[in-house]
Image (cartoon, rainbow, N blue to C red; front, side, top):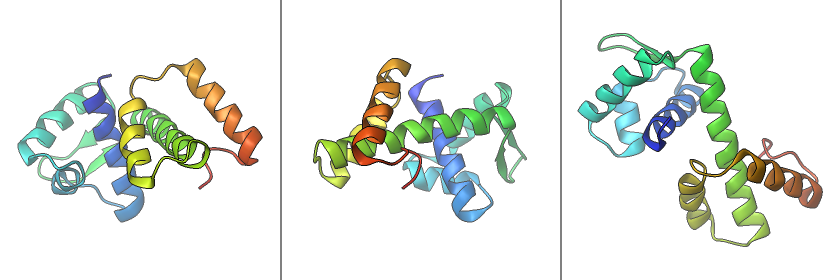
Length: 128
């Protein structure tokens, strides 16, 4: 999946956990994109089985979508924590850079970063 698709899935996951219901306007606002862009992305994600989207209605993640979105979000949180807490990168820059890195980092590198964090901070990366 491309970076954009991952960003949309992560946005749906986060909005759903915050508001309970996800709508096109919520995603457009979160990602600072147009509603037509969100609609195009939702059609693709729906066709690929990641979301269910009622016409002019709510958007929900399928089980496949939840698994993928959760994986992306976990990578994001882990990278933010590593950049912020280990490398002392500022909060804003950590979040921005994590968003860029999360889409291209290898599984091996993520496993090493996760292990490093758990060893040095004594906590799992998904707890924040």
